[in-house]
Amino acid sequence: MAKEYRVDLDALDQVVRELNAVLKDMDGTKGKAGSGTHLPPSALGKKYEEHEMLSTAHANMKKFIEDEIMKKIDSMVDEFGQKTKKTKEAYDDAEHDNTM
Image (cartoon, rainbow, N blue to C red; front, side, top):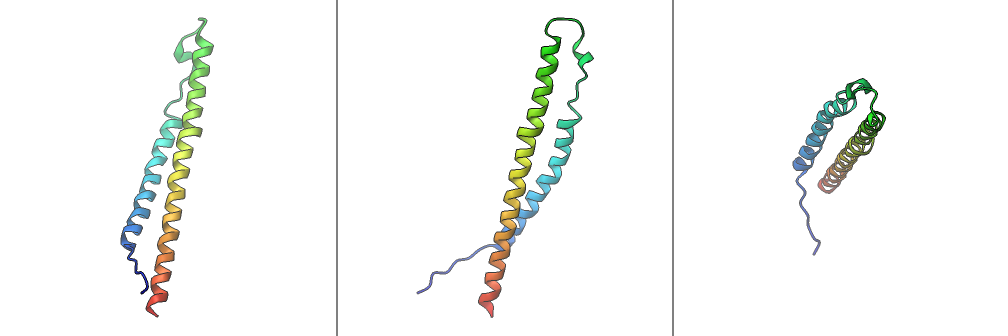
């Protein structure tokens, strides 16, 4: 006896739609992380020993947030969405082939 499986294709479609919405929402967050956190060196004051250290630490953290956090999350969500879409399409094709 062949084993049967059942896949909720609508649920897979919903996952893809929701992941695309997350990616769209993240565009605003990426913008805030990029330009919304800009801090001119003069904002930290001037002519004191720790000024350069604070300015460099801020720049490094900003770059870390943009490159190591936001880009990786964006990439991960996009990859999962693409894989989910391909999986759904494969099940669609299999279902179509089984009805012929």
